[in-house]
Amino acid sequence: MKTDILEPGLAVKIGRRGYSHYAIVSDRHADDRPMLISLSRRTGTVAEESWDEVVQGREVTRSGLPSELPPAEIIARARSHIGRRRYRLLSDNCEHFVCEVLGLPSRSRQLETAASTGATTLLVALRLARVHPLVAVAAGAAGMLLGSRFSAR
Image 1 (cartoon, rainbow, N blue to C red):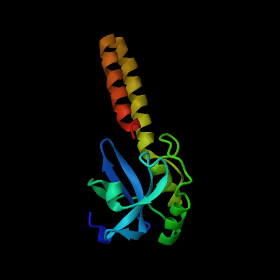
Image 2 (tube, one colour):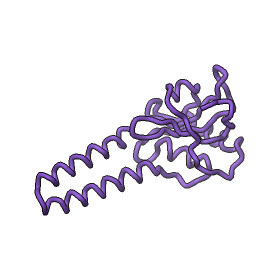
Image 3 (cartoon, helix red, strand yellow):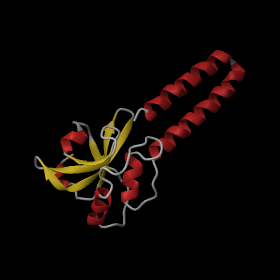
């Protein structure tokens, strides 16, 4: 993605293996690229970091998350959490953080999808147990593997 078309305050997502990392585009620059503000497992907290440090060569797209707030307020809200907020995969991850600073309800659709997928897999495994116990075990194992891809964020 061309970094010169990214407006400060915009929410972006960075493709990772099995999930996306969410961040806010800063109004500050390092190495002629905008910095990004995000909550990550890597830092353990909210940090404003260089583009390359956060993106690490991966694909970046607009998140599509809406906001009625002005960009300066979004950035100020994001910065107010720098070093003060701890990363928690299930209750306070990058997506929760970005939604909140955009003025949206704090939530993670990725976690909701993973939980829904895991519950569906469990129900299928229980139904398959009536057909053959080994089929149920295989389906359950596949569901656990799928769920672990999401929880390894």
